[in-house]
Amino acid sequence: MKWYMWRNIVGHESLIGTLRTFVLTGKLPHALLFAGPAGVGKTMVAREFFKAVNCLDSPGDACDACRSCVKMDSGSHPDFIMVGPSDNRTVITIEHIRGVISEVSLKPFEARFRFVVIEPAERMNNPAANALLKTLEEPPGATLIVLVTHNPILLLPTIVSRCQVLRFTPLDAVASSKGPTDPYILRLTCGTLGGLKDFDEAQVLSVRSEILQALLDGDPVRLVNRYFPSQEKGGELLPLFVLLAESLIRDLFVLLHGGGDLVNEELKRLPLRGVDYLELEEAVSCLRSIRRGSNENIRLSNALGELFMRLQQMLCA
Image (cartoon, rainbow, N blue to C red; front, side):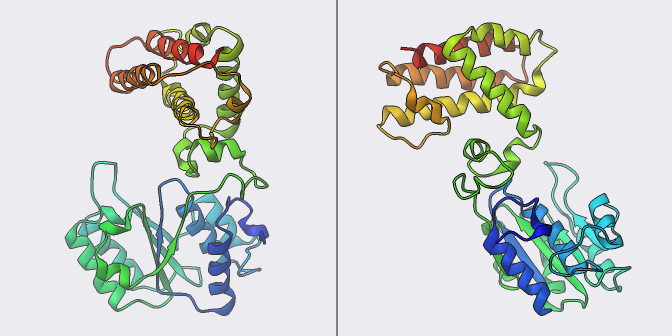
């Protein structure tokens, strides 16, 4: 069953049902641990859950129109607190957690329940984790702590034991095919949509279509030169081109081993000539060189052009 307020969430129907039951029964845990791979929507679910708990008109499903819902959607709700490191290289320190502790000792400003979302929770250093543990042992009223983690094994076992754990799994392309996300996107990202967070779905599908057309019946070098006209232009699209090329190489390996579970299902209909390991290894080596050289002084158009020419030779009979 797909509830209205959760319409922006792809998949996770069972977990959403559990969270909705918490609201409708009034039995909210004091701490939740959302565990699963990056990019499956854990933080988005936490935001929607806050709306479900605190909606002024329709608790459990949320109206998306009341003051609480509107503030949450605009990112201005004072009772939804995100805690995390300042960048990818730093940790969550005891100062971060002390700030949270001082907040949760007070009543919520407006909401029924204040949410404190710590993400990624595994980035807490030991002093921070121990400080949080004390709060979890004596949970404050009207506050729900949500730990979002990509690697729960890195958390202190004592912290995990004091949370109700909800495990998020990668989205299934078939099961989610009736949802708003194209099944190909789910296959491409192995069900972790965050892997394409810098690109919208229409852009991904458009670039993919152009690449396939160029490889199967066109000029891939011309296509690459159009998207990467100079060393300074087109770099923001490199991760997408690399990911799409990676998916094609992966599919060729699968076909070489006699498999049929492909990301790019169109390849099943092609009369592929004999592809051997040496050609695939050369393509992989070319891809590695692009990854290593993306921050160095290599000419992206030349490197990508060589990679896609190799793929064209393998894909065309």
